[in-house]
Length: 322
Length: 260
Image (cartoon, rainbow over all chains, first blue to last red; front, side, top):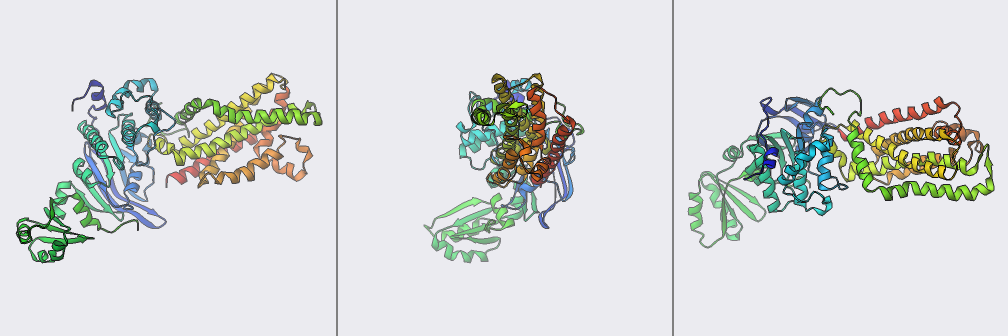
């Protein structure tokens, strides 16, 4: 990506300090005796993109809140950028950028005023900030929109502005809670592109997401949590290799679905039924293809195993908010 | 503003919160001033001239002079309370402005103290406007009237801190009606804003001494008339005690509500 001098300033490499951006050890959170986060440990390297995945109510947001010292942990140790949390929250948050799930841009302010007033929360005076705002607006693809009110911006623009706002303090670590939820594919692509360029500049990214594709594309490593417990951690590639077969056939044709049980007898094949669909997981595709050649004309869908399969394998397919 | 150092004075970083609210107010200044200052001035003129003719004098001063100091105090109370309830609640729960602030180095105490300081400032803005009108109408007895402004600020801060306690419990906007109906309206009617406290039963007078509005009036009424208030330290002390205790409780309550 070609970038101007201003943009390059937004993307300057982060200075290295402690080798880990985040260290979490034995983290626990209880609400009224209920264990919401149960003995979670992980660490994030500097410059890494780390994704936290899990169904609704798994404890993602609680972990994130504890990292930012918005919730005191019931037990465990948290260190963020070398600062102990929640004790040194003020110093740590001065070096963190946060993109929250809920839109909280200031509706009473214009685009530019949002950046300037937010910078002031970090102790950055408008005169010092003004030099940086054009680079941030370029980064957010909002050039020429300085004077626009927030309600005049589309959802994608608002999200980009929120991301730009999170950069006013030139943070070492960015914490993003479902950064692309509710965005259209174009808007999502642009956010991904920007997040990648932030990674390239040496910043650390910590994000939660519901989109497995997003995690697979962006994250160096992901952690999957369910019921407050860490169920898996590793690179998306390694997790796929470890937990699911490499080849997936999806059947919806009634004829295939009714006969799919035959396949279960094959070596290295695993079958799952999800409503009207049958998923055939196979270590090698040939036996399934051979079987399918006997069912000429029937439609099926073939794809490689992905992180979503891992997710379902580890957390199940039940709805969590029923 | 140095960041990351050891935390010393609570609310040391409240300034950007105050400034944010000030900048928004400046954009919407005209309707805001009209609402918060136009209404008390209308009351002053209508009641002052209407009742004034019937009542004549209250002690040493005319009824409209008596009323001017009362309305100045009560408008400090209402302006600060309104801001610390409806507006602060909007920033907390509707616009999520607080959440955005708390993602920065600011802490809950900075945001709460910043809101209290801002609500007190709105009380000061409104009472300043009313004082100017009162002076223009010839209802002010001397330069001591300028000392009414710091008292109005302190009164506004104390009521802002009290209102923030209510906001800390509020599940919705409707909740504020309880406080308005059960606390602020009785204070407005029974603290000597519209008629002298002495007209009320002894028990009521005594009860009202436990609330700050009576003490604000006891200070501001003589100051506007151009004389020095008696027992000024006692009255000032009650107002400051309310500010400090209610402010501390509000910070504690919000920490409990937000940092769950």
